[in-house]
Length: 168
Image 1 (tube, rainbow, N blue to C red):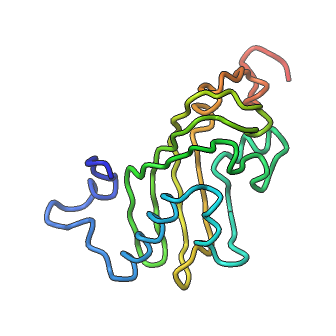
Image 2: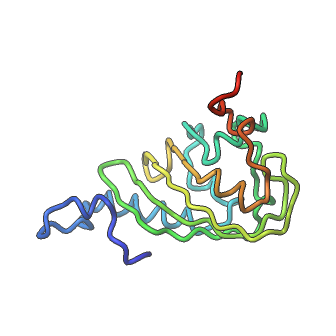
Image 3: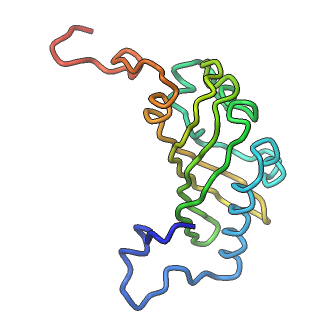
């Protein structure tokens, strides 16, 4: 993990250890570290049946491409994917983490055919843990950074914004 202090740690008094966790919180952190370290195709074993994704990591790209509910991305999209956790914290049954996704674009990714480009994208996630497995999750990825690295054209239409001085 990075030596960079988390925003949470930075906000605490100097004499408070931000990494002092209950045994359950530490077990939850360990679960997420293991989950992020295995290949994408093997991550289901860390999830409860019926696990609920409240938001996928690249949800806006899924909306634009019409590939919602995880259909725009699979184990072949970035087949050599490695996630490096930059920061991770826990409280009660929740774990928050920031990581860097690194890998090669080797398969369809939200309708974009493989480019063989190297990718490095920042993501963050929140998990709720229940009985040692992920019950709920929320993910947020740097979608604009990903599109730029893929060489995709970035237009106002793609971003669904109106440029000042134009009519809708």
